[in-house]
Length: 335
Image (cartoon, rainbow, N blue to C red; front, side, top):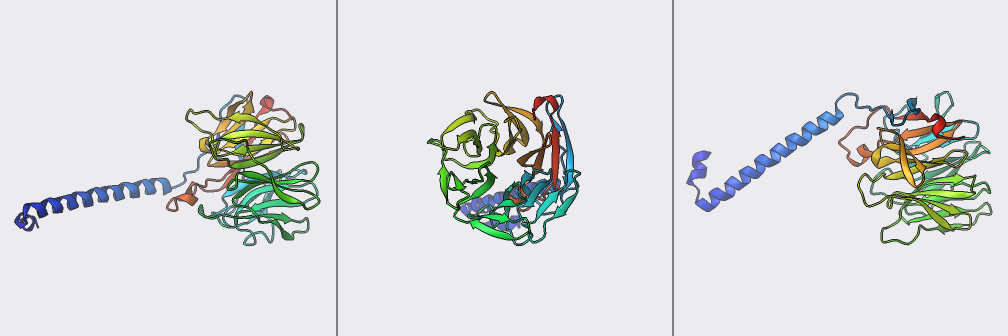
């Protein structure tokens, strides 16, 4: 082969040498990528979340049964049960206060991608179904699971619905990241866009929702602006937190509140749980596996390990098993 190359004209030899160099470089890159994938996919890669403050305790609470569980959302019912659902299979699970997991019949397959949940006092469950787990998909619906188990659609006029909550008067709110707004459904059946974040050069993406009963207001996280807003029932709002220009953006997602109104957020980009305190984020725990949502129940915080990165990079396996964590923060939190 060397002699054949030497017999070629100079110009052709240079082209051949360039092609050989490029092929060698590509081979090195492919081998490197393969080694990286083998490293990420080898064995049990499960990380355990850790406390970042004195007096905080973190432990695994419940393991979900499926390798495609991908729990994006969590909600606590008044009686103490927790609800979470799969972003891939549509299955919804009820988790008892003791950590026992049971699947709700009729949810798997009937729902596509569970993105948001809100358990209501009368035994019903509001569900945001994004229909498809593909990162390229759009649209979705607000579903209601009645106390008897029947599923029915309440609305589907969304671009990219994410979370759902309900206020004390029975109004239901849905965040729509794609449309940059919060949508509302009243008990009378009236529905439509209700609130948009303040005007800014940066696009808005309302994401996490929680009802603040102490102030009769809605708390909204914005995953694009990394902001937290409080919105009164009349639609007026105030900014509780705005991430600056410095690095380490939190990637705000789910939000929950203590009975006294303390705001807790899932900082997905930092894999951390943070308390909003005097306009700043105080991280209480970290090293979650893609923390995406939170729920408060009986003095404890419950967090999902969504681990959605493997949905985007299909060659990577998720860090199994999918699980919910429980965090106790003692005197740091009231309620």
